[in-house]
Length: 253
Image (cartoon, rainbow, N blue to C red; front, side):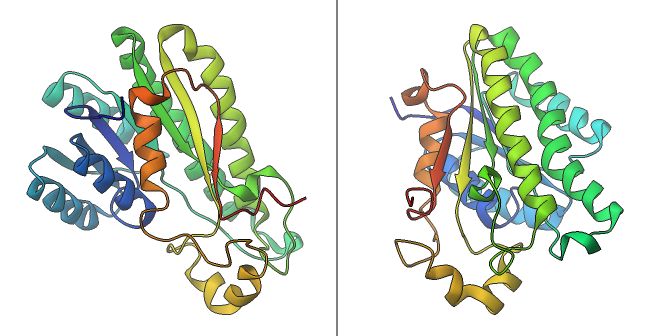
């Protein structure tokens, strides 16, 4: 039920951080994994690690905001493998600063990467999955997308807004694609160490931990089992769910 053996997966932003962890988890579970991001050398390193596990892997340079890049990845994967079973839309970026000072171009960049990128990849891959009559699309959201956050903790209006949009995209796509036996769900992580959170943790990490019931940040392995679950047939009747992995933050009243 939890097997993804020989499934074909694409992980965007798969060269480092949470994307790499999820890509490796799928590879360890037997899937053949395609990793792509703008950082090709990082993706090539992950590809090598995946191939050392005995699974097939391809690394691509890809800007998820450019339709031509997305189409190239999807078309090449189809030529190589003939199908796409799993898509994890993980590529993301952020911008921090007071709302009144947010530059327009930074707002656009966050929206383009976090929302448009997920839209473009889901659109291209869903065409394949509809033909197959099966598939799993997993979007990476965030607990910050559920509502406002104290600026003392996170002053990231563009990021929070984009993740709220990703949640709505997830639910709407789930409804549209469910008749085709395609499950669209999202993972909403809490605070995990990533490139995006590195500066935040160094300046406000102790304060943030006080707001996490588990009293720790997410760590390696906390997200991988969830990714495998949503990629496997164990989640075949799960549609449009936002699965929170946050150490208890959302459980607080």
